[in-house]
Length: 292
Length: 313
Image (cartoon, rainbow over all chains, first blue to last red; front, side, top):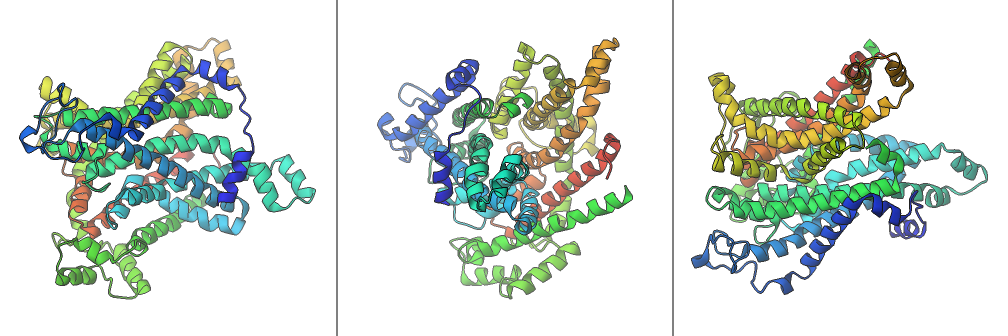
């Protein structure tokens, strides 16, 4: 697996536009990138940005509305929502990036096998069709119902739900490339199959794959929040944005801020990643950009 | 065409087979003893044993799978661990709210999304296009429960126009049913509309660059006739495909929306089952939803024959 990736990074993907030009044409990508960087810094330096323990209970100070003392208020058992939001950013980003990396690697590997091996293709694609017929959140729910709640299990569950889409993408690219004259020429001149795979096929899957990875990252963050919201996500002891919303749900009519603030953070994060993804798509894959 | 119909119908069998194998083998692939996991941390040994027998976990794998599959084919989805009722009965009792919500979402989102996509493609590059696409990006980025709670905050708690939550069956009158459906269908409809509007725009752009559109323009046909009669009609296949694939998104959204608005449908049943660790119900719901998804896409594939006479099989 790691061999595949090392080689992939060595091969440059030539964008049709220079980076500066792309950035000038897509100010939204700069906006998304800046917001995302700020959120990542916020997650990394969470302990420095707050002096309050996100899990410390202060029952006498429960349900305080946002104020100078508690920026985002306190929840029903007096925990400081501001520090819970900071630490919650860690969960969302770890799950988002974790799923994006795991599902692209697994999907790339399975997709390459399917695209290059006809017998394997039939079996793999039947399995992928079946997996795709199960709505992703339900598949993740079914997996989570059978394992102990933990961040690792959430990543695995969402990865399994996302992999079929990556496999389809990679296989599609491989199938079109396989019939291209330059691949045929390579094959005719006696190049070994795995060299063709590494040198000609793999670099061409990178652009759509990177774009797909950003969208998977965004959708994984939403899925994690939904799983936690429904009670099938990360354990309730871990402050995550989905958990904060889930706990604040019953008190929505008296303390809406408990739901609204993490909801805004969630939406802004996903929006930032989507804007970066749209920018990358336009820069790396102009053909797709025109269509979308 | 008849041969195609038969082939297409037969093609759904392996897909449903894989769904069944996946849903069934989840119990085995997960680490640890599923019976004690489902029973929870405070279960007695008898409870664990009861669940083991209920799920048939005490028998060999292939026999279990065979029995389970045969039962499903006969319409027996097992017995709920929590309520001891047949799972299929529990699901059937809750079909109506889920179906009502899904239809409302589809109606709301399609009436919004298709005109939006058409206009965005027609006015491509202008501020109207950017506005519509911005609306779509927001729809992709906001989780459905965030939109839903935002709407509740504005329309129920501040303006007091609509009920906070709950469900009234359409049997009790359309005007009693409607207020409870407005926010759920708008919240989920926005997300679904984002998907469809984006695809409509993309498909329309593809068609609008064709020669026959230029011909239609040069012979002096009106804009609305070109857009709807020529372009949209030819762009309909990818749009309908997206709607079919989007049904998975819709189903996921229904589960969340029913929870936010306390609508007693299959989604709510699934969420209650998670909290009670009622695995047969989760399994049944996943199977039923996946089956629906496959059926909808089958129907769409068949509809292509009528939508696009160029398609010949």
